[in-house]
Image (cartoon, rainbow, N blue to C red; front, side, top):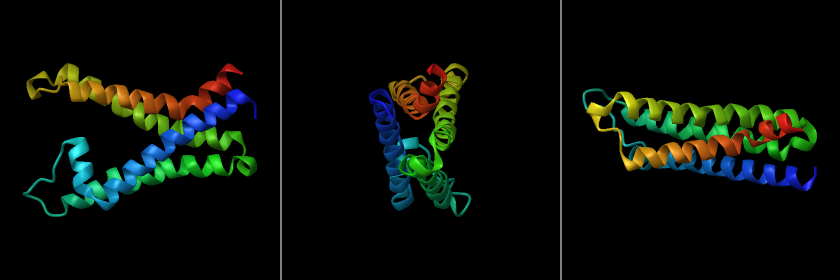
Length: 141
């Protein structure tokens, strides 16, 4: 692995660690996840906190944990495993950015054009590019 590849692995690992940490935080403290996504359980239905622990907690932690695992095991599993796992995680973040932009364009009556959402799009694109970097580097080689 050359110097460029080492930096790509580091960027991917940082994004993987950040995604895993965000997931673990939401799993352990669902109110933290609620504050980040600015949603809350519907008081008419029981069990809403389980959704924060599941989708913003466990799923986010394990998705990014898979990226970290493939990075650690890349000497056994190969570069393709890293590209596959990190590319899948990047699509998650790109999908969130697309959804947020669509909402900012179409849901103006819901006051979605906020600096928070603009910053969210930026963060999601950065995470998406960071996680896609092994795949992008492979395309360039």
